[in-house]
Image (cartoon, rainbow, N blue to C red; front, side):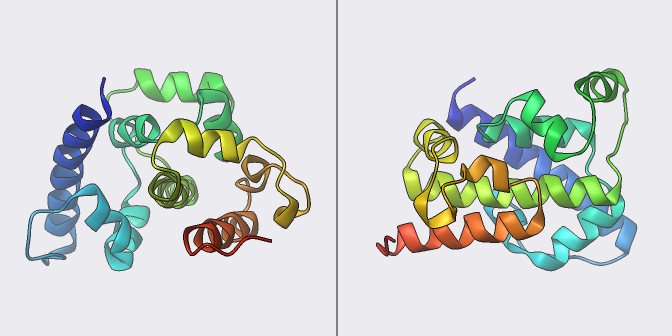
Length: 165
């Protein structure tokens, strides 16, 4: 599936998910149709989504937007790959809030990284290359914790602004 097709599909899924969150919460979060970018930039909406739990179907679309493998995702979410496969088979599985928060945090990092590097391939190459500014660690290794994600995000912002260490 092309990046444009994935983006169209994820925008549709986000719109449906946000509508269900708004219905559940009893108020309207945004006054316009929601895109993936809107979703990731609206912290209040993310809080509601985390509390509700990200459905596996939405996770699957988010995962397609990222350069991460199922093994990477299993490690990030502290799950086995078998568990991810079981969740895929379930009709209506929703991740726990702690896992949902991790999924959305990684989606934000990926969105930023793809914006900085222009595409998933270049971003993934950067993620898997030891980085002097990050203590010669691979940025991918740091994404397992929120502090590591902050370090990676800060470094992406520096790169975007042309500040190199």
